[in-house]
Amino acid sequence: MQDKRIARLARDAFLNEPLFEGFTDIRKKPVISLRTILTSLFLMPFFGFASLLSNDREARTDCYKGLFGCLRKMVASDSTFARILSWLKRKEAEVFLLSFLATFEAHDLLRKCLSPGGGPRRLGILDGSYMGGHWLVTLCLAGSISYPVVIRRCLKHGDELEVARKLMDEAPAILGDLRPELWLTDALYFNQKTIRIARTQGAHILFKFKEAEYREVTMDAQNLFEHFGGDEEASGWDGERQCQWKVRKTVDTFAGYPVQVVELNEFYPKRKRERHSRCWIVTTDLELPLEELREAAHQRWQIENRVFKRISHLSGTKRFYFKDHRQFFNLLHLFFAAVALLDCIIALLKAHKRLLAALRAGIKGTWRNVFSRIREVLYELPCAFARLI
Image 1 (cartoon, rainbow, N blue to C red):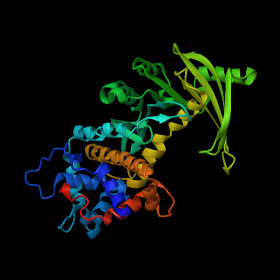
Image 2 (image 1 turned 180 degrees about the horizontal axis):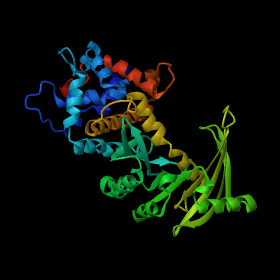
Image 3 (image 1 turned 180 degrees about the vertical axis):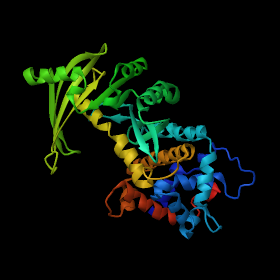
Image 4 (image 1 turned 135 degrees about the horizontal axis):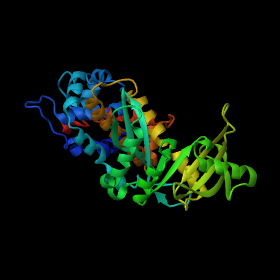
């Protein structure tokens, strides 16, 4: 009984019938419905398929065909997947990735409290990546889940900053009231133009980087801290990351904007190497408490750890796919939506402690372990996705 409840929760959370209705099918006499093909592609991170050939292989098994109520010899082939991706409209894929904003907001998954008792904040992370032979910039909303909501292609290496600035400019029109209140970026974005874009939108921006020598404002702060100490200091123990931390702060101006300049030192006693860590944080938000400022800097890594590395691990996006950027980016929009929605399922399961305990069945609660169990219970629910055919 519990397995069926888990399966229905997983299915109903992200595989309702209207999911792929926004895509146009240009085929005249399709044998396999477009929604079935897109659902199979969408499931690849869920099942851990690292190539279209892996999907092809699984699509021939009775268990997988049973999910769709498929009576053919296979759900779809790898050549069919590649062909469909070549003519899907990029705009429809972009709209699809954005279509879950209302659902996630209804579950209050797009905001995050940076400290106990602190108010929830809308955080936006900008970062570039190189996947499958293509350069891109991604905007990720970092809340209770990590939602890579917008992808932009870079024509070549070195275009990241300009593409990211344009994306920042477009964010209010794309996201409306759900746009970031605090942008989290790295040293590449630390310049006047990027700050001006954020402040014009009524948002703030935070930069995290390693070396004080990168900007004069941090060199001045380093000199101040060494000889006179900080204007304000704080320290504590981070139980989640198992480290002792200390921050020192001063206030200065950069390119005409007042900023907090903070030195963060951390000590990780359980590490065998690199126990000591130091970085610099600069933000335009003068009201951001030091504890929250430190946590916001750590949240900067969500896009690397919970989006880029996760999708590479589950679907092999670093290694393969297509030279044709249209195929690759159409597929990446499906994958990013899947990652966010699977995060949503975990969040929903955490609200049902007994179901989560039954799902884990004693295994370590890693992301991939949890979804290996969901796949198992889905196989026990006949024709789970048959309505998509």
